Length: 196
Image (tube, rainbow, N blue to C red; front, side):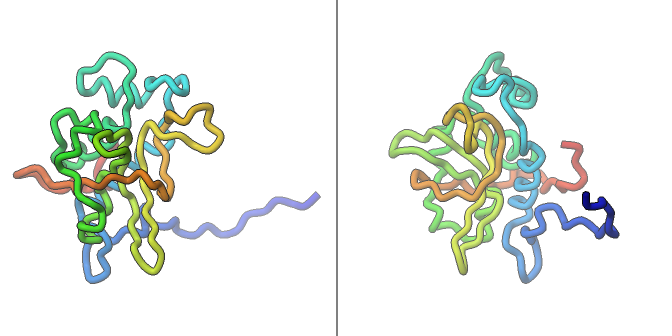
């Protein structure tokens, strides 16, 4: 049997190291940077039991806004992350359709504004899912990576969603995005100074 051994450890890569919020090589805004780090804190959150739209962190998000029972929670996930970063959210942010009046086509948005934006999926007049863009590279290859709650995974017992996961998105039902705006008089939250 081969022997086990160790090698000298090296410093870990910077968290979300692909994101650069300032300087000549910036690829996102400071607000988008903060939001992308906030949603990363919830990666791996699971419904308990699966397919229940409830349990643990999911229930905490929903109860934070006065609701007492299981609900589809993708809008809560986006809303919580935006609120915790001092970004404005629509009234009834937990309802995907509430974001519609603020939505614009992705191609109308400056590339720096994509990270941290809410991306909405659905059919005309029926938005049924929302997530946060965590990576946006438009060239040489288009790569849009998103993170969101109430999302399924390969091999899941349901297509309805089960937790908070992050994947590249190649969906064909993207309806548009909403770019975050900082609430008046508020400052951008430093993601490394937060206990989230």
